[in-house]
Amino acid sequence: MVQGDNGGRYPRSPQILQRRLRERQPILRADPPINVSTLQHIPGTFDVLPDPTGSPGAFQAPAAAWRHVEGVVRELAARYGFEEIRTPVLEPTDLIARGAGATSDIVTKEMFAFEKGDTAYVLRPEVTAPVMRAYLEHRLDQRGGTQKLFYIGPCFRAERPQKGRYRQFHQFGTETLGASDPRADAECIAFMVAVYRTLGITNTRLRLNNLGDAEDRRAYRNALRAFLAPHAAELSETSRQRLETNPLRILDTKLDHERRLLEGAPLLPDYVGAEARAHFDEVKRLLSALDVAFEEDPALVRGLDYYNRTAFELESPDLGAQSALGGGGRYDGLAQAIGAAQPVPAVGFAAGLERLFLALDATGATLPAAPRPDVFLVALGDGMAARVFLLAERLRAEGLHATYDLRGASMKAQMREANRQGAPLVLIVAKDEDEAGVVGVKDMASGVQENVAHASLLDALHARLSS
Ligand code: HAM
Image (cartoon, rainbow, N blue to C red; front, side, top):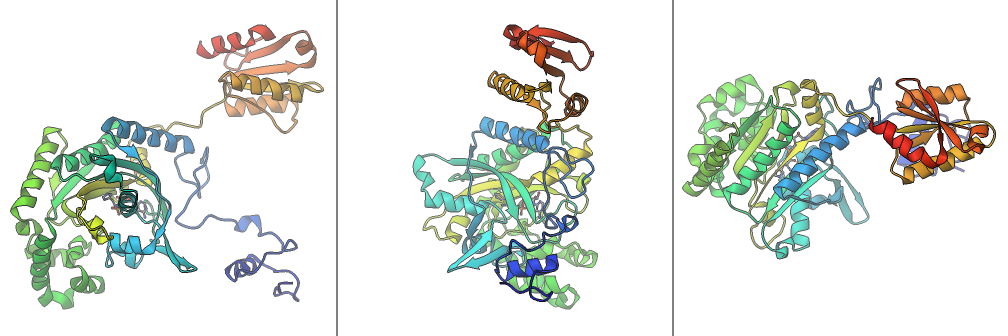
């Protein structure tokens, strides 16, 4: 028997239970359950409920609102010709480390990584490297043409949770693989903007930058390092480290004195070669032709190392500190960084669904609530519960949303439940009437109740529901 702390019989507290789990000891049937008041989701994660009202641990938008937003993403993706891809939540750690870049915050600080046997796993912190892995592994290029893919799904980053920043969050995004044409860059930005526009989120700011190609960035990195080196002592510890590993990330600093220091720094666009410059000019021209407003920001660098040429971020001033709704860019070098022999020109973006909901909330939009039943069936009298069970199933087979009480409650309590669920019609299935071939149909709005013959029940329900 596993020993607890109380005389060697049962574990006394949830802590002991957790220790058992940690040490992979069995939990015994005799163990007392964890007190329900200590049951809690992991901070930085949340439940999506049918109706989250009044539950601080649940995400503010109900499941129906998630379905609605995901529906908008799917519908627009279809119009733009993006096909769905679903990759696993678990990926090899190596893929993410090589893909996102060994010096990125995601890899150095934020991976949920673990080992089992000989394999190192990571809960995916993003979906771009996994999509590229799938493209290369399944030789999707052989389907012909450019692969235009979209996804919606959970990602995981071990960040300090706060409003708009979670440890499990959800991204939607697109990846266009095998296209170097600037139209692919502009198309993916246009798609991203269209999602927010369709949902009525217009208080946004699109920032663009040209990161150039690898050799442009190498030259710029050296110039920036040379500029900052004499000021190294004035930099924060993080920036001092970045000066060594990845000086471009210093441009992202939120510290005022570092921003002042950077005022005279060389600018990345000045180091970009002619080809990358022409590419970026065309992206900008295409966006202007679509009336997609943008600002150029030479200090925009992304938190992942795989980008070249186009980089962009969509922000909302309504989000507070975590202002990025979504972002992305071109990543022509990623395929080779994860082992491909040939480069695969590619561009894409990803956006956080939780932040989208925060921005949607700021617009005052009402989110769709959980669907209400069409009909609530009330059982009255002996044996009628089984009759209601069968009748509900028949109505469902005819396409109606039908439900009933499962507690064996009184007539009054069943009516209360029908009301709570917001059913517009209640079917009162009473023994005598049922034997006489009729059921009562009550219109909850008017309070009017009529008997309807079994044979015409379906027509009667449809007529009332469509009136
Ligand atoms: P990212 O900028 O790291 O890019 O993430 C994209 C979006 O995911 C962010 O703008 C934000 O809305 C959301 N997000 C990121 N971390 C969190 C978090 N901890 N909590 C809530 N939301 C979060 C990428 O992931 C790239 N893979 C985008 C891309 C696709 N580039 C090319 N293709």
